[in-house]
Length: 150
Image: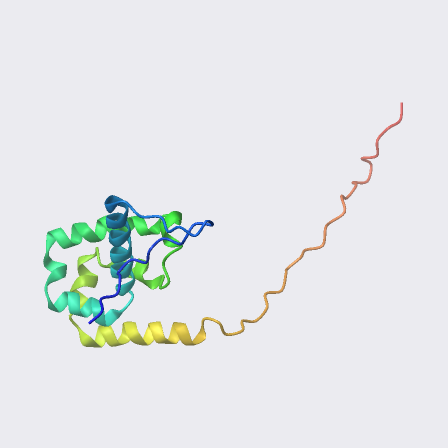
């Protein structure tokens, strides 16, 4: 069975040669892709439920890892996020109340319903917002406040 590469090779240079990556650069790329995939999995409420069932959310080391992943909010990284809901769940996973509620399948169903509803309607035409312009008031002159000529 043929094994597919986990990381695509770099694109060829204009002269046709294919540059090679250093082992360190390759390892960084694999780490980047792995962390990106994991963060985006957090957008799936069933995945969050599974993390709860397998007791990952009770492990202090795992919670520290979730805090570490907060760097995905930075502009240079957030541009790779396809499912932005994952960043909301990443924040919520740091609260004990949310982690405890992940054991309730009713709550998971509600998260899925809300997510599905959002994706069904997020491109729906919205009513155009009319620009509210207020008329510019003319400066009023008070009677008797005319300038005196000297």
